[in-house]
Length: 379
Image (tube, rainbow, N blue to C red; front, side, top):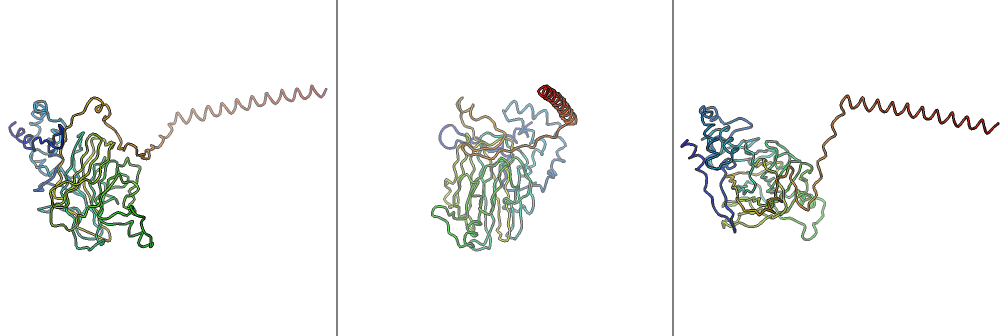
């Protein structure tokens, strides 16, 4: 019991952030930092799980403790199933070419045609949260001869490789992209065309996208048709730390960056009316093509934000089942019609035949009456 109390009490205590009654709590089951012990490849569980033979004995204590200290039951369940005492990094899976190093996790090396990802194994059921990402992008490529960037995800599906910065296309959830190569600009230059004033973007560029599974990320246009907003972020080959924060509070999405070495957050994207379901997964991924870079993640820290809501806000901020953005029409997902059962097909054929026979009989009766009236007029 003492071990459990130490475990659950070892997280960062509440800290007030911003104005008003807003506090943050570090959620270790969704966070990753050095040392990276126990990160697993693919879907294999940490070896420590097999060593915790006493986990059944702890189950009753866990449920009792959830009632005593007010910890959510699902958090205790995940501690139980994945392995208490294995460290926060045992809650993460590597995919593709991602590698664990001593000071960072390298999603992709500075080599062509590589892709890698890092995914949290625990779905997030927090209502309001803040994800702080410490990352580094660097390589040998000169200006505009490097790529492609990395993405941070909060999505329904995990561990699904694909063309969108190493993740699947038509994802369901939120994607934040740190894009380092201007595909659209290079196409414009090849066609000897120029952007109109105010349209051209300066890369590296950070953008965000909310998808309900119906949209494709337009890689050739750097996601321009579906982006919620964006900002320029010169993040390559810097000699100081670079950070990005994603904050989701009261349906309000805010993305800020700290890339100038001043330890100050700078606004990048702010979008109200963003509706994200709970129970999705956090992850990060990267991909290289003909051009490449080292894409490193040093830490991911998720904080639960506790904010006050009045009754009207409680009513408006109910759980949703598909991601959406107010005042932005996303194509609806149309489910295919279920196939007809044998009974339904039989009834359709049967009544069709009955209707056909009935129509033929009525037709014959009407024809006979018409002929009879014609004969009477003749005589």
